[in-house]
Amino acid sequence: MTSNNHNFDAVLTELRQQGLEVTVCSALKETWYIKGSGIHIWYIATGAELLQLKRANKLNLRGIKSLDSSPDHP
Image 1 (cartoon, rainbow, N blue to C red):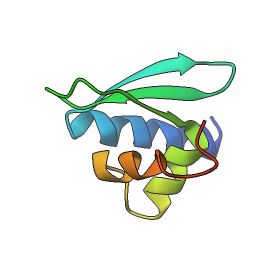
Image 2: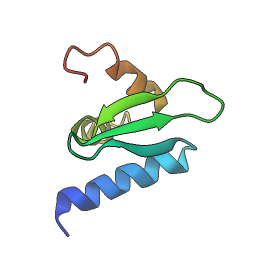
Image 3: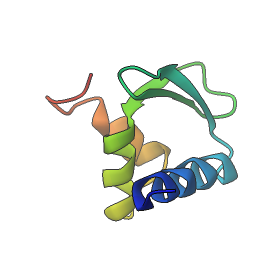
Image 4: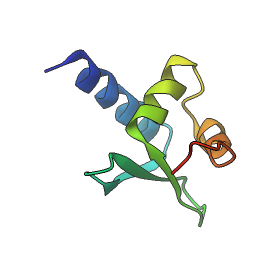
């Protein structure tokens, strides 16, 4: 197991512990659907974006929402 895979597993675990639903959007593009409970809006983030949020200690729904305004967001 590579370090990156271990780090990403920690990202998924942390998001799910926060009550967020995380499912694969596209395995080819490494994108994920993220949805909070009771929220009817889904966010899409890449694995790289989620790892970046974790490193910046912003791995939460607010941090994911902030990706929507990023020019690099898919």
